[in-house]
Amino acid sequence: LNMELGFKSTLLDGAMTFNATLFRTEITDLQVSIFDGGTAFLVDNAAEMTAQGLEFDVKWAATESLTVTAAGAFLDNEFTSFTDSACWKRDPDTSPEAALCGTSVDGLPIQDASGEPNIFSPEFSMNLRLDHEMPIGNSLLLRSSVDAFYSDEHFTAADLDPIYAMQESY
Image 1 (cartoon, rainbow, N blue to C red):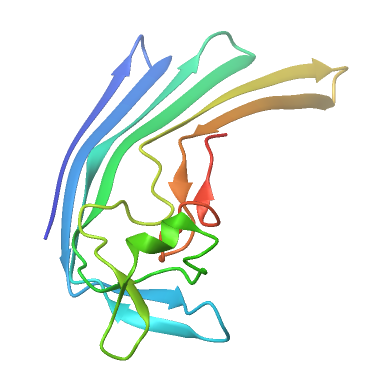
Image 2: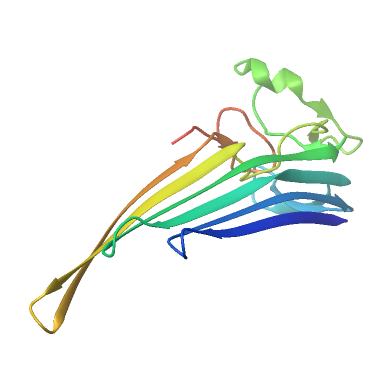
């Protein structure tokens, strides 16, 4: 199920464009690939996931030679139901976090990831870009740009290991 509501506006005779989209996506029978901590990747059924949020972008022609572009996203992307997610492998004697993992029927470490965020899903991310053009003589054009990007923290592996699979904000 995917629902999307968009908005687009052009202001100041084309000098500024604004786009925004609200979205909600619900997925059932989602499959994820999880490294088993040894030598293989396991394909697991994550049951249900919901992704919802807001994306926006603005493009502004500040002058004839300078364009400013900004974009961002607010994202809530989590496993709605994932009661038997693979868990990281660590020694419970040396790593207290290992106590968060249970054991499946076949002896593999599992966890209930219901309500946890999906991988590569920062809650907030944005970028800002400045583009500048300047003529040099009659036949050359100098183009330069500067980019800045920000991302909230997010997991990078589906086992949701809080130590080795967490990318800090940058």
